[in-house]
Image (cartoon, rainbow, N blue to C red; front, side, top):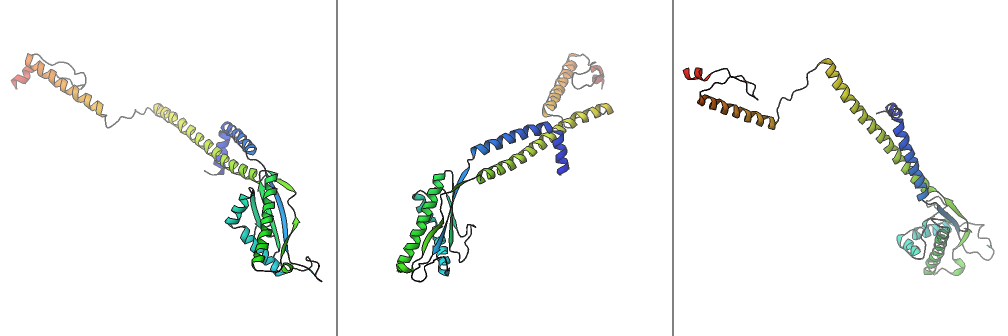
Length: 274
């Protein structure tokens, strides 16, 4: 079935299609109310190298070690054990930690972006705060293990904090898109099936009427049923029994049988003469 056939079917069954469309609209409205909107909080951090002496501006120069430290932190905090530890501390929102906010790790970038998405503003703020704390703790712990002096250690500074929380309807739009697509496919399938069923029903009486107009005889079953064969066999045995009884009593058979439809015109006397 091509698009033109589908359009013709919808035009023939426009009433059914309208009813189903109203039901689909009601379903999508309920989905929009059932799926709640979500909240999102962002935070950006920058890995800075220690500064002192003549170099008093840490933003004036970028060291490749800053990008390497950022990549190391990303690999550590995205491991399942670290995620479980943050979850135990109350980080219940969906968490994404990456470079430059693009969702991927960018080489030699000292920036770290933390994005939390959840159902309440407090949950997303709490998740971002926990992630930032774990990033700082992990960076310091690894430098302490390597016995890096305090004046040479890298540090994390907050560029943008998680104070601003925005709303997002991505989950609602995704649910509406999935529900609408499935509902539209079901609507078209129901309309097509109902249309074909109605067409089959309308063809059968038309074919019977044409046969009656043309005077065609009704079809006869070439293979009679078992019950009909048994009835005919019983009728034949009864006819033979009546013929035998009539022959012994000296009478004659001059009538039709009830079932077999065979007329017996031979008299008993002719049979005796033979």
